[in-house]
Length: 217
Image 1 (cartoon, helix red, strand yellow):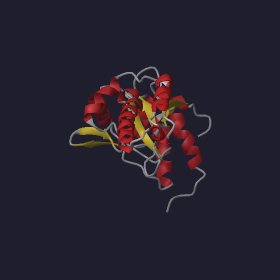
Image 2: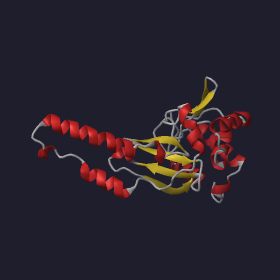
Image 3: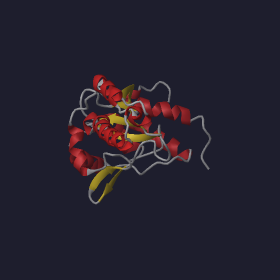
Image 4: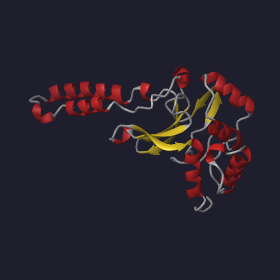
């Protein structure tokens, strides 16, 4: 696969990826048809990035990849007439309209993050444990509202889980469209940041590693 320009991977190349995954015994879903893809994009109100579109059409609706097994790329499936990304927070139809909003691409506001961290109640400064519990719960709610605000990830699909609370997102709207962002908000070091690669480069980096591994039994 050397010499292929990742940003312009053609259908034949992606089809070769599917053949490789099958030969290695990796999890891989059925392909989406062009009609499936058109219906999906109509429902979410945005055209998906081209590299990911080719993946859905030529590799599968989901497959093993750079994340927790069996699906390093969460599958998109049709349930009760609606398309959903399985295993993500974005599989609620009420959230779908936000995929067409531009991805912020800024991550968490560092000033507010620092202020919240400093404001965490210190149990040693409370005479009454119930007072501490009440103060900490109030602070924790404010923390979650800020760190886990859906405004942080509008215009992006959560593609996989990295384990221990880490995730990766594919941006589908806005200037960062087509790029992968890491999400360590669940790892005790809250933040969203770019991985510096497009979908194809991200997937092919994993595939290069997978080529060295034995076939699954």
